[in-house]
Length: 244
Image 1 (cartoon, rainbow, N blue to C red):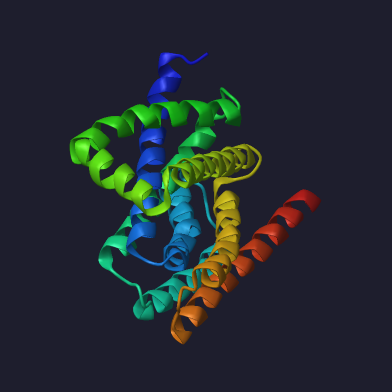
Image 2 (image 1 turned 180 degrees about the vertical axis):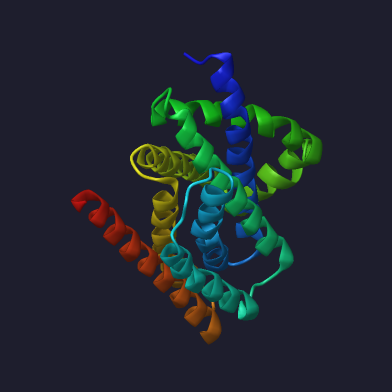
């Protein structure tokens, strides 16, 4: 059961949950999937900044330095990305900020309820948050130019099937991500998200045939190397803490 205090805590989290997913999808529509995930590799940087400056947690300088290649790599990839446009870039950045807030404050809510309950509540609240802007900005056009055009292109059966499986996998991924967040620190969770993006970027290039420039490929590799360096330093620090 939820009380008024938990509801006050979860409403901003749910708003960020909804905003993060909406802006992610706007970015996917505007630029190549691989580019969106390269930008979203910056999530640990936003998470580190929020942990230090909002929550007051001390982030060691070595961890900050390990995140520098992530920022440099994403910058390199952005400069020569063939599908670059500002809508895709800004949407992915807004998604980063939204999900950073969501993970930090979801962690706070988990002191009073488990991760499955937290995700259930923020999903339900986010649905109600998203309905009014969906009706205001899209309204009847959603049926006319959204559903009807999609059905005309792929057929009713495939449209409903794809919509079902996209929703199912989206839910399962986010449910598991929230369950993981209950067991690890927000910053570690963000790094796990970046490692997931390595797979998504590679998979999207193979399956969708996304063309990337040499500099974009190098930038993506540099960003991922930064995440690997962070993971190594973080694991070593936690091991030293356990020993002492």
